[in-house]
Length: 506
Image (cartoon, rainbow, N blue to C red; front, side):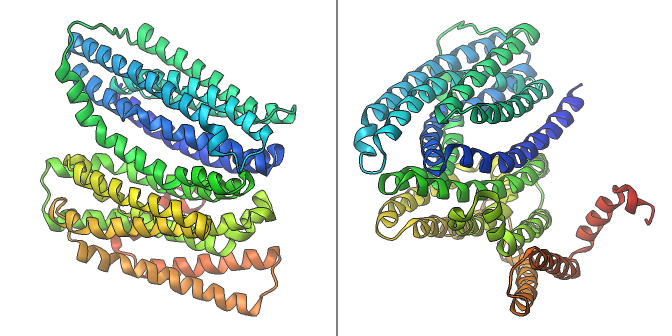
């Protein structure tokens, strides 16, 4: 049963990621055209603020998964009931904190955005903030029910419910906008759906799993244990929000919501790029746990790190190269000419994310070895410096310069973490960079072929665009295969064998 739950949960996670990205790509231009750029920018800006407040969860949801799994394995029902009681006490405090912070923001909206929002936009922003704060105050503790399910290794049912919710949300978004709804209507719809999911998950927890939440005894140390584990999960969540969501808030201080909308589109494309890699990296976390337990030697561990990084990089650089070539045309046909700068924003974000995403397995090793503290401190320090610099740069220079500042500090973090990977994660980083460098050379050569083709066929039409992407793909694959290891070639053969038409040739 557990094996089916684990495999089913993993499969449904990939289905969820696929649906989120594909439906997001399809819905975004429809939402923009229905709301208009100005209101879409307002919608994403307020959403970014609520995204910031969501980190006040302090990583408690993931902590619940870990501790419930621990108590369940030990068959300690009383300990589990007491732990959950303490967790929900913390959630009540968090909900009160969220409400206070939300109300402070609500009463200061006129002051913060007086120069950039119209009176009608401010009115809508105030309504959205109130609804979203209520949504968040209920959703944060409500999310614990899904965490309890995962702690019991019940993955399939909650994930199916989430997929149904996302599909239903997509249908409702279209219906609301077709019938003349606005951003406030979308926010109300999201709140109702979240409440419905909480009710369903609580039914699973209390009626199917038969979980009880009882405070058997008050334990101060219990709160300290919970916080000591969850604090670094909170830091990593905060860093993600600071890097990409904070931009929408500070842009809103100085520019119109139409410009916020352009940044939001570029950031969204960058997030899709990141989600693709994260889906691959998550597969390797159990392997990281396994090699940690087995105390693998540096050479073997580095070999594995290089194998996984090269696979991820091979795919990421192919997407990056394709986006360099046709991304501008894609953005034009996707959301319109006025969003042209979103292409450059997304490209800068993708460049910054590539070294981070390709080294995800090293972070998995740190997590498996419980060595997240140094990386958490480094990430938070560097990110805060980037945000402070970005705050002043966006006003004086512009949005692209703010993004490049964020990317610069991301690269600084990658450089500073190298000695830590070398000493604590036991990775040979010098050999790692030597082994991955040919992949960047392959990308450069493939783009060179594209530039030659572009020189002879400068006039753009659909046939030229298609010929460019075909030429890039063929040249990248040819040079890529030529530098592949036997292990990487065997993976491709294995994948090809699963395709019915090609299977007969093997």
